[in-house]
Image: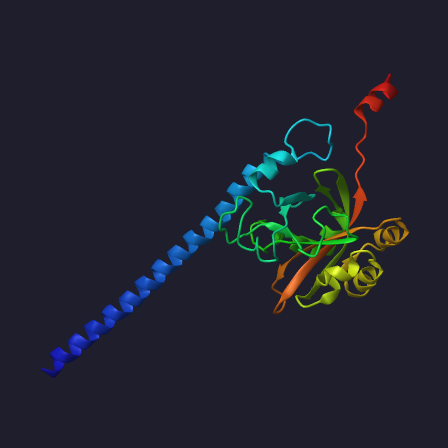
Length: 263
């Protein structure tokens, strides 16, 4: 009788362990599937939007901001960092949380969108503008900001483009920082809307890497403008990776003038 009871309990324990193992196995499979679904959704959205990416040259044919605005009136720009996968439209919502988990189409998406701080002018006339994006692996969203923490990449990759409905800017990356999410020198946007000297001083003191020559050019600019890109980091609790870029008004070379000169 005791042996049968013991056998029954052992069998029950084995069944319980098997159920636990199967449950964890099923959860692991689901987690992998769900993670893949999130990344696939990011790829699908970006692929569709890249077909609508406006040109920095207003006279070129192709997509225009009207097509993006027809999808979402909150689209206010497009940012590209060369030699990275960062190539996305920028939105500005009613508040800082509007596009945390919402894509350009207004649908729920864990990856969210790239968005402009609500304290900024959506036409990018401020001296300092701050945009956010989720940190994701596989070169998605703002995950590639991590690349700038490597000195070699930072030194060799300094260019990008900010395209707006009425004008464009070349981006000259001059600093990469690793800071806390509470750092007012970066996230207190309103204090640098007209004067960025304090921001430049903070960068000079705290940057992981910096191109001082670009900072010097900013100080000489008649109307200096800086674009900051922010994403989460893993180095410590509430860490943030920040990339700072000088905004230089883009002037397209005239193809017609080039043709005349060749003649």
